Image (cartoon, rainbow, N blue to C red; front, side, top):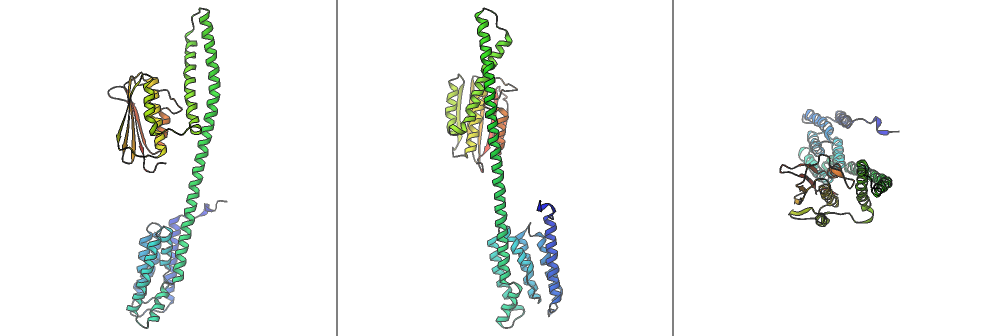
Length: 375
């Protein structure tokens, strides 16, 4: 059964506690001895104010701590010897919110102020003054409130950590399942396309040996099969990369650019800013963006030159790939990524990706990846 199904909203609970404490303090004050010196009305107002202030203990725990502490001092000065329940609840709330040091310092200071207040406003033997101040703020109850707040804070922290761990494990399992499905789908498609490729090659070969004209549809099937086989092999390398070889990063971009020069594409690499270490996920994504962009340029853009810019910025890494080819409105995705895959990778890191034709001709891919807090 879901135990939290009938739980009251936090504001309702806070107000209920605040009103309950205020009623408790007022009833205790009214049932006790009447203060001398005409301080009844201010004392009752302070008792009620100290209790009602607890309604804001979640939103402003330190403010509530100060208000309830001042209320306790004012009540003692007015002649009420009422246990500062509101301050004890405020200590619990402050410690639960993580303000342990502030709660300790405030409590020690309040003890000193209460003793001084009892001495100034009531006088009498020192023993009676100390007893009067301690009756307003019992040390044992104060320690209990502090311990309860710390226990709840630790429990909530462990619960948050457990929830975060479950979410990370679920995402990891989902990623592993998607990778497994992708590999199985790749293996199946590779087999079927290989059959199509072999059959089309045989048909073309037989037709040419007989001196017959090869039909255009058959040539198209033959060429499509060869292209699909190349892309599937590249996809397989990308899928196996996580298992067999270390992931590529920024250090491998120079070799990647150099490799594309051997294909006839005049490629340049420019590094700007002050190079520094970046999170592994950012480096992998930057490498994949450059790889995917240059692959599309070489295969589909009919370009002769391409430039790669890696710009190290404060808190971010910028990648830009420009070419002088012809813009293709529907570039063929490769390496299992494509423009959609690049956008998904960049978005997962909280970055931005912009792609589109250049004003001077060609195509541009620009990405900005945050390096602060990435993993």
